[in-house]
Image (tube, rainbow, N blue to C red; front, side, top):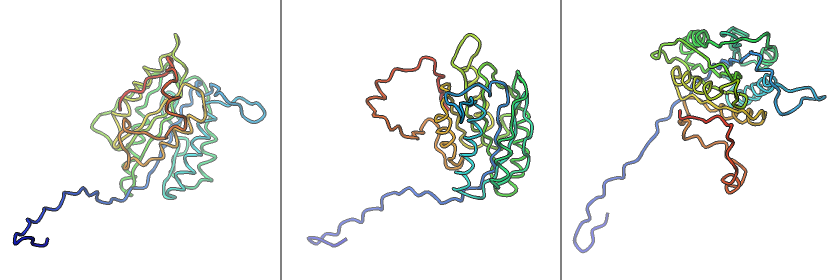
Length: 262
């Protein structure tokens, strides 16, 4: 700095700055786990062409195809595989692929056989951990996206808390609370499972409205890469298009499942 009136001004120290080092996001291997219990056949509040009932499973398949196409547009190196969830997890398509022509028939071929009763996630976590090790060897990461539809059956698992090799996301479609179901208890069990196994920040979303657009919105939010996420409590997308005053004045749905902190 220039000297003024014969006095030199002291040099000001540089202001401290925050820098974020660039990192390369790993390509993902995404394992979809789709609930095939009878509750997956509950009808949504929309009809298919010709008036045919449109079920939760139909909407889940459509949402997955939307997700896959969008994810491949972002990065064509992402890969996908499928398992079903009955009493435990079973393979539908074991090989991970980025070929949309292979993904579509695998997704559309998933069907419901019979009531499943309880749901044990232990085998799903075993499969995911095994595949995650193979993904890591290729400098990739593995994510499981669980789509669960049972309103009265909390999932169970036996898995050590020290093994966090993959990230778990959950979308939970359920009935309204009633004497024959307990969606809040199921939701709490899903939250516990997510926090127990996730390597990065896992997200969980729920809906008891039976609206396909809500499911699609949740799946679009799950396009976010696990290595690039904020915690779910800080998530403020998607933005509502409704006026804030209208949103503030809307009555709360007393039957809605409470979304607890992640």
